[in-house]
Length: 146
Image (cartoon, rainbow, N blue to C red):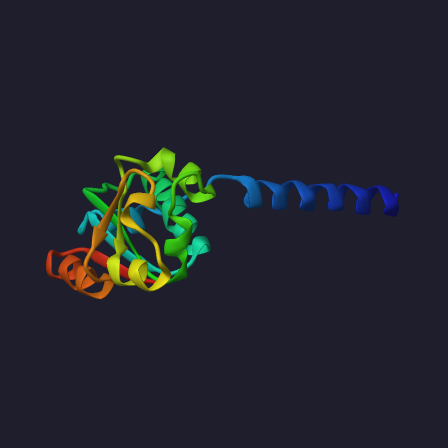
């Protein structure tokens, strides 16, 4: 009898854990109400992991009913070399094209030898990432740095 109880307990814990791990994340109503106060979002980042993460956050916000007027990612650093045509990030970005603006730092491009013509479609070149972030902040964007 003890073994059956333990077995059922293990199955119950596994089922509960699986639901949490693989289920859609649900944001509470207060969070959504707070986020509706400012509907413009800006992010500055330097890694592929954060690029994908910020794009996934866009999905999370939309799925939970957040209003997004503007959503911009400002990219600098070595990840710029991965924003080229026929790259994994180009394929990943296709879902967000036309919804999310991506600005690429021209200083990083120059230092890393990335030509504007080699960037995949849907990206914008900005003179400097830092000045672009200041501009977004001046225009009332919620901003995060990764």
